[in-house]
Image (cartoon, rainbow over all chains, first blue to last red; front, side):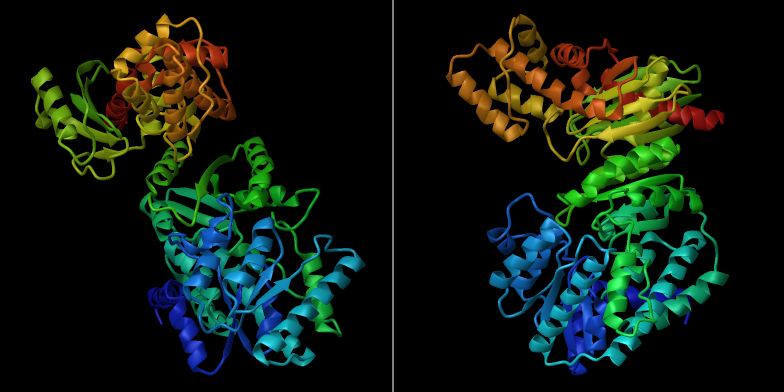
Length: 371
Length: 258
């Protein structure tokens, strides 16, 4: 299949997750919604359940405002709004990791606002690497398994988890390869995003099969001809109008540190643990370079600079999710590090409720003219 | 050879014609913007003033809020770049530009080569912009041009603590009800704009010379408040509101000469 057809296929899925949900339900599968940012999908998958990502939507917030204060991320507000509106009808549960204040509040509000879809908390330890952190993490995974068994009736087994870990590790590798190939290939910001976004709504083995074909096509396809190369960081780079601004201005996203995109695929789960849940806890311990993961040394900052340089980015654009304090805290050291290395940096505040991208468009165009 | 620069701002449309010696042949400011006949009127004005026609233009460059919807230009460039080019032309030693327009405020850094090296735009908010001054002038039943006259009369300024335009409007009405003289209120309003934009400017870093451009730069009350707030001399030109259009025309000229 030609690469454009493959992109079109993923675009359709990325734009219409409800159809994907209905398809899996019609196949008799159980589906569980997984909230940002690092839900243990391998465990859910191993129980024969389809994990589907929920990162909210660009919509007007009405009902969710009854539960949230005004100054909180529109991502979690829109997840709740979708839940109250019935957009997730059919899913058996929602798993929410407790990785920031916004997400913790989402879980608590969900219990009352959407009582027909059970809330499953995933409490991660921020002290990830010590033995006690891994022990805590394992206990939290076991609670998720228990809650999902009650919510879905599906059973857990070690052999099935081992198999799912292999599937997810393969998907991680394929996505990492895609990100590298997309760095040099002629591919639009919208197409690049569709590959990442569609992954949230598909069984990973299905997604892997398509992305493998895309990767083969990209290896032999035309090379990028945009004049400006940028590295993008943030929680989400999701709005089609915003991505179109990149494309319209000939600004190529050469690599990313976006939470919903490349950050998901950096760390594989070790496959050699006798108890694969211990392997999952070790994966958590091995993760780093993310604003949501406690790191006193802020290694993420150096990683962004190195990745930007490695991919010949002329600038770094941070798409700052409004009221995401974890991301906001990291911006200052990122800015200083980029400036020290002579890399131009631009901060654009984004929101789930943006309707006008004129200001963002001006900033991106001016940034291109500047670099 | 002539080039045309068109700056389609959020409240006004500006046009400038330059000759090959980078001299302004004609200029126009029309208080009407995108979606109106403001742009065509501004162009018509400069053509009439210069006795030239569009056929005489080697190229035209559109900038400003409405640049993307105007399809008659050879080039389309962001207003940030155009203000940097325009200010550098008039003030070659300028290193910081504070551009306060009708609905946004921008701070630009210019390097020693005259190229924009950094910029900061305001949040999506009317505070600290020309719109804020429009709203306040309306409450006080003053013409926008009278604000600097009133501010100059005041010894002291009343502090306007609200940064939000809507809340500030209520605050000004309350102060009027308390019998505060209009000059003191106007001076406080100018300082409010200066304080907000100055904090934005400090984020980008202040390097002298500092130049104000954009429509609000015409208001001496805001310029004086900005000088006081930043502790630096603020340079200003009668062309401040035309800097975007001038930069656009210069951009076109540079393209032709490249």
